[in-house]
Image 1 (cartoon, rainbow, N blue to C red):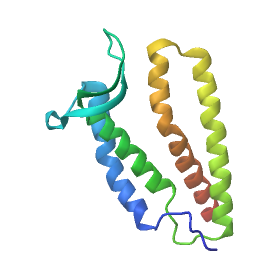
Image 2: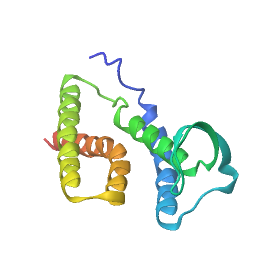
Image 3: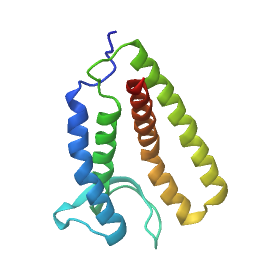
Length: 153
């Protein structure tokens, strides 16, 4: 089966190699407020609302982009892992891939609905930040679990 929408197989390895340091940096950033000082830049911001003060629109601001790079590399690595071809990519694998994506979407939005009902204020902002990654994570977990089940049969 021809699958033009998937990345080449080598992207999965690249994604795994990118994900390991990204997760390490994310843990350091989240729990120890670790930022790389050489990533202090003047960046263009469409909207910036500081904790104290009025919102600023379409301005250059001084920012450390450590957290932005962590998010970009996390998304890239998860997309590379999730949407790379397997050695054998046939109709059955495509069907499992589709069902896994559907299942991951259901799970993701059930978790999000739960969080909408029971998390508030700043905690909900954290939930939304993590929610950027959970759909891909749920898909990867679900798809690989189904592939392991298939291989055991």
